[in-house]
Image 1 (cartoon, rainbow, N blue to C red):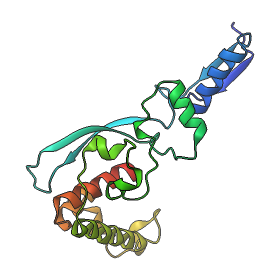
Image 2 (cartoon, rainbow, N blue to C red):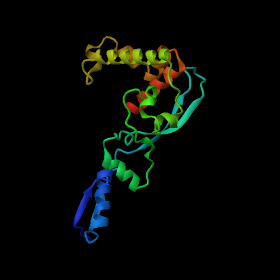
Image 3 (cartoon, one colour):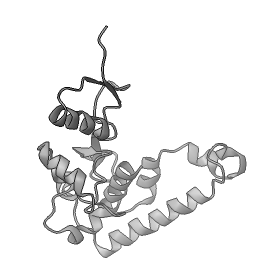
Image 4 (cartoon, rainbow, N blue to C red):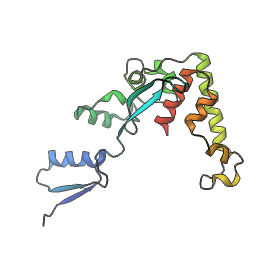
Length: 191
């Protein structure tokens, strides 16, 4: 039987950082990392997505990889930025994203991020307005469902909404291609 001085539970950033620290500063300590998943990294995870370039059913798709956890590193989180640099990680996704990041590229000029990776075009005023209006509509729809546990109980529209995907709803109700792409990007990165 192998005995350990320490057990680290979880192989996310914190667990791996603890193991790295122990290895570097206390090599005499015998430790083991326990992880329930079949991978390490915790909430840092990449996912390949395909985004329609238009609302047309025969549209071409842009396939790219997005972060679905580690991209939410803000400019004030110095320690995680330092860790990424130490591990020689790709710091492209370190831009803090506020709401509709694709329409606010100028705020982060010179900092690479998802905007550049996905080659999203800047929205015109009309396209941005369409995105804002659709977000308001989606927020209003969410307010019409008083209980997420029992959505069909007190929401008159629940059955109708349940028959269509969010993607189908957007394709039906968003007129402009860039607005539709922006909304798809918001949904896959913010949900």
